[in-house]
Image 1 (cartoon, helix red, strand yellow):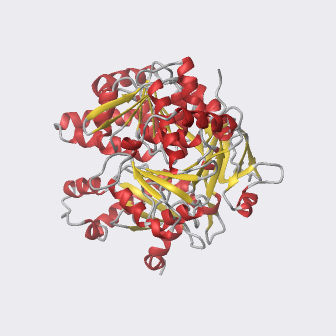
Image 2 (cartoon, rainbow, N blue to C red):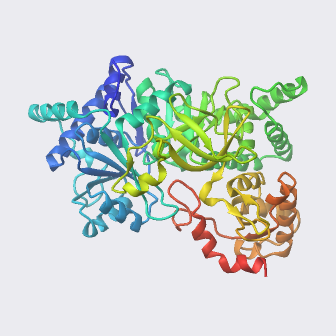
Image 3 (cartoon, rainbow, N blue to C red):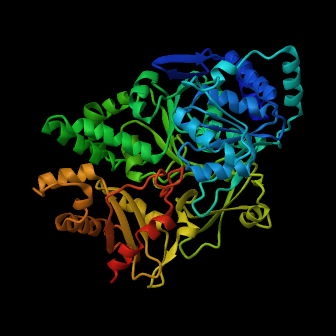
Length: 592
């Protein structure tokens, strides 16, 4: 048996790897699980419920949830097998963005997982064609939930589901996923079953996960990255447990003891911060050992022969420090896949030195999503790159400069059907010979590994006539433990400047050590001694950059950029134009 449509996956699992705990989650402190057979039954219940609402093939239905859940999967696959188009919504989206998507996609029903999301969606009903808002779980004084409404299909309903299921071909539209809209209104990316299935089959052999493994999912399923990876878990028969939330992540890791997880760099950074914060509470000798181990780990190179003395020190570091890190992750981690943003190479080396193999990949919503990925086998990874193109995906660098840097273009079965109701936008990103213009700039390094330099639209030309990809400079600046967020710009300026949000916990430690009086962050960013310290920190970091990329001017900010303030997208990308516009006056004063 094989699978050609996404809703075939659980039938494939039942035939090949039946699992007594295929999907699991925790609710109100209790762990609940569903076998493969249970999942198939729930998916049919979801399809029958949707048919009773009057939905028909081609209609759009949305799901918005803060956390992953088996019910997300039941609704997702229940919609798909009767031809209803799934429209995932990001829980961090603002009301204006949600209103636009609901109206643009003409969504008839939306399912939510929390009371605040339910209230937000209900408030948009008068502005859109939305007919129903239904929560996953029972909520006080709110109509019945999905949990209460899912009932066994009748014989007639099962027959109708079967007929609709058989009529759906692999090339049919499965889902519309709206992009984060960094440069304007969101665009609906149309992905077929074939688009996503091709990506599953190209990626499945690259991940160290099988039917004997436990996995933990904690990224939102509204992102194609996590959604596709969960489809892979189902295809190989692995058990999937959904985390309670990022606040409970460490406790969930210890409880589930997963063999494989996926993450975004920000979560990895937060986990390291939690580990460091825990260690800082200990005695001085323990902190010194931790600092020594971390510095040692940052010099680790996977697959590269190191001197015997280094391996002896690393073995000692693993005994004293890193084995505890592995236990914090459950003790069984065989791999961590990272995507959505650039991973600091030092973090990659550090985790790998600790025995937590972390591999960075690259993709777009428009490519279902994976384009390239660092391998887990020896010689298949390079820190600082996004890896090798995956099987079945062609990749080329167009119009490279003298350093081999040019636009990344992609071709394969994973490339989207197009943007929903936006034929001009679709034509703009497709070449005449059928390649997708990713808008990313990159180059080949180590002969076959792709290294990204940044977004083509984000590149700027300084007053000295030099083109700069800001993301590459930002990644370098993130090596400082005192920088939480930064944005590099400098179009038509003498050189690049940086907007910096300090890590205030680390800055407070520095202030106490230097006997600098600590007050509120909005005052500390103006403190002359703090300003002088950051100037020295940038001078240190500049030594690792070519002269034309060195940051000479900077502005310290006291408030972090978040998706809630509209300065970051739902996928945690900076809305550069908005941030620069907000601080335009202060930026101009830097050069006055």
